[in-house]
Image 1 (cartoon, rainbow, N blue to C red):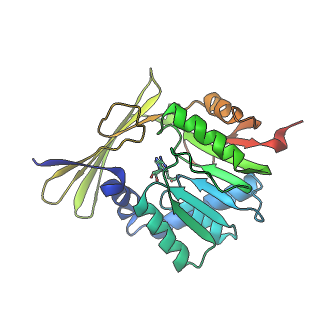
Image 2: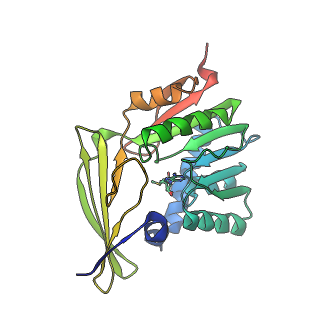
Image 3: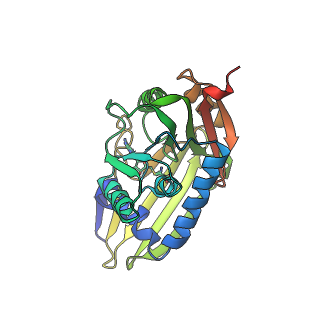
Length: 256
Ligand SMILES: C[S@@+](CC[C@H](N)C(=O)[O-])C[C@H]1O[C@@H](n2cnc3c(N)ncnc32)[C@H](O)[C@@H]1O
């Protein structure tokens, strides 16, 4: 069997974040709208100030917040996903801007945001990159703003092996948690209609040795709270609307 490797942006981003939802966009939008409503109400997001969302992917939650009247800026290093999100914003005439950038660089983030979000991404980059990113996130927050980050709960990460048929091919996904290190391993394989196997090879964390699949460190709630606190912002864990996830909230409102 022929085998080739593709990067996240070269092949996998479109396959997993766009093509996989074909025929399911209505349900996808319902979930995103419900998440946006929950975020706005639970964390009292301020509509008068911008929302900055980092590693926004195809912009599901960001576009849903824009549909609720927020002015949103999303940043992601996948050109494919940023273009997709931009097209959706134009089509829906929404107040949402999507920027293509690598967040491990030191590019300055737009400031004075009412909320700064980074969902389902921390743990993919190196410790140093995540520490520096967190400092920049906190600096881009308005004094009264709220910073929200989330992560999966380790307990929910049971080993999985599943497959799905779409685009005429088969998508296989194996995942497991390495308990000793807290690393979640994800091994996606695409099998094309011609029988070719496509693996993912992408340097999310440039300090790790090159490998196929995704290695993601899964923070415990107290570790993620401490990462947010390292910016000087008071932080606490909060219940997530998404099953198997927890939220960490950073805001000065909790002071005193
Ligand atoms: C698991 S997805 C999460 C997407 C979205 N936030 C969500 O909750 O569905 C991780 C995202 O991080 C983005 N990403 C990974 N490394 C990045 C980097 N260095 N700079 C910007 N975005 C990055 C990927 O392109 C991808 O869209």
